[in-house]
Image (cartoon, rainbow, N blue to C red):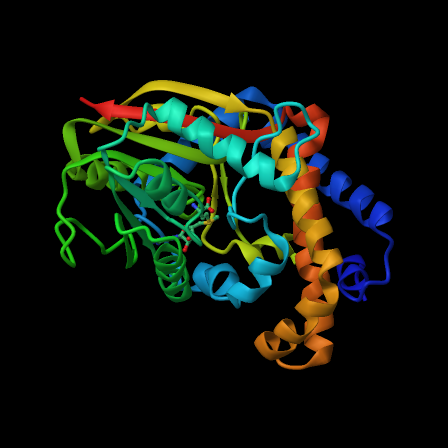
Length: 348
Ligand SMILES: C[S@@+](CC[C@H](N)C(=O)[O-])C[C@H]1O[C@@H](n2cnc3c(N)ncnc32)[C@H](O)[C@@H]1O
């Protein structure tokens, strides 16, 4: 068995697994293309060319199955009450997960300049963390959420009905092929908000061109995406150490903080912000603690989803490894390597 299989079998204490992860993460930062500025610049130019030659996204069906078609009951057992499946905000560092969800949602509203009455699209809406929050906070607004996962629409619409929210519509569709007007959805949005969906994309030029056509002349796009401060790369399976790609993030992209400066043909960046990786470290550690606390309820869900008790045990450990790795990536060097970028784009 290789070390990763030992961890998958639950045979390695977390403290050792995390130390091994930190070693692998640092080895990426110490690779020649990361350290040598000439080579990094060459690699970045190559990477930009590859993004520009790609479709809007690749492997969309695989990524969807890996994450978003896992039974929602699993996520209900360990995410926060809003089911926000993205980085939350811990201004004092002492917030609970529920408080940190609210803090980040409120920060989006402030940074995107949201007002009641605006037509707002939540692009890549997950289980509705932002869509439901917006619909409740802005009763005069029309909210449209789009996601390519089938279970998500049903869940969000059920929640909207329970809470008496009538200003929300959720569409199941792939942003690669979806366009407005479609399925009764007109363009003309005041804001498009996209929280941790751009990580699943490749050709940001084509994507931003499409979004620019959905916006009113004064409309704006707000993006929240994780990023590295300098390095941009594809998630690719090259060897057994790339299990995070293999199981969780096929077709994914790690952007660098300033990557979007190269995609401003249709929309231009009005403002950007950096959110310390510390916040994602805390979020992911909260999710991990939630999983451990709900192990007895999660195992039967996994037995059904992954085909029996043996696979359920392995997948429980894989998800644990995933959350530990996220915490270690984003927590590295005080949250100053990987973090989260917020971008506000306006029309040219
Ligand atoms: C990390 S989750 C974030 C969910 C949500 N925005 C949140 O913050 O809780 C990414 C979301 O993007 C959606 N997504 C990924 N690829 C997509 C695609 N090609 N078309 C539409 N939605 C996509 C997934 O279904 C999922 O809902």
